[in-house]
Amino acid sequence: MAEGSYRDGIRAILPLMPAIVAFGASFGVLARAAGVDALAALAMSATTFAGSAQFAIVSVLGAGGTAAAAIGAAVLLNGRYVPMSVAASGAFRGGPLRRLLEAQLLVDESWALSSREDGFDRRVLLGAGGLLYLGWNAGTAVGVLAGDSLTDPATLGLDAAFPALFLALLAPLLRTGADTTPALAAVLGAAIALVLTPVTPAGLPVIAATAACLVGFTRPRRRPAPRPHGARPQEARS
Amino acid sequence: MSAVWLCVLVVGVATVAIKASGPVLAAGRELPQGAARVVDLLAPALLAALVATQAFASGDELVLDERAAGVLAAGVAILLRAPLLVVVLAAAATAAGLRALP
Picture (cartoon, each protein chain N blue to C red):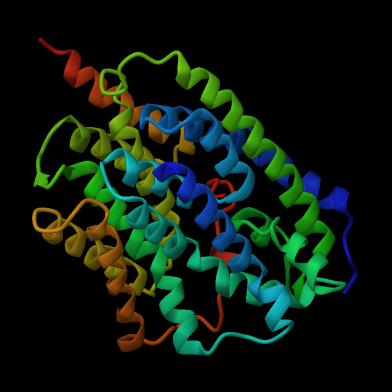
């Protein structure tokens, strides 16, 4: 395999940078709107570095859920990185520590952009992931600062921004052509969460909704393996 | 420790471990088909549950308020393939606009 360069990765991710910085900024703003400490929001972007999980944490906490519920939802949401990281594992070099550190730059976009016919390009993944990491954290900082000057989040409609954002993250996962199983899992997940909302503590309905993924056992995969060709990297999902 | 810092710590460590799981443990191998399929479906199930609860739950009650209109506007923007920021702004502006009505 002809290996690309770090610069190839940086060049590939550049067109997405405005969206990634804006996504990071919206995390900073919404974290502050949900009452999350500014420093905690910055630390979360620097260490977790996974947009949908971070939004899940602040939305569950903001809705009065416990830390356990927020952690459960975020960790399960990041469960998607298990098959992605296994798929890309052949590209990494060196000892366990170096592999562990380099693997942190694995996010949806860097994974999709570094995918090649015969595997994954390590330098492209690290170049794209590295710039994305900088943009995500810079965006978060801008958003946290802007969020501090907000008055009432509800007046600005920021409570509607959360479900809108989750819907935007969900949409590309449902554009799978003939494979309707992701859509079925989504409908079931939403139904479970709504049915449980009146009878369980906040945050739990979301975790219980993961039971919907068990439909995977009854409906076998039609695609050969998780490949990023269907992924739409222009829809920032870090 | 506050709830949010606990989340930062636990989710941070868990995410580092999850991302490293392939490169450190699995070099070159693949997940069993059934397991990969189920893990694949975690994200759609969870994201849909988050959409539903964030749009319709208020505490332990289900309500239909301005947020639902905001999500509807977001859905239209997504169908029109609008960028993420436009989708989010459409939802916020719709909810804020409806609330500003007398």
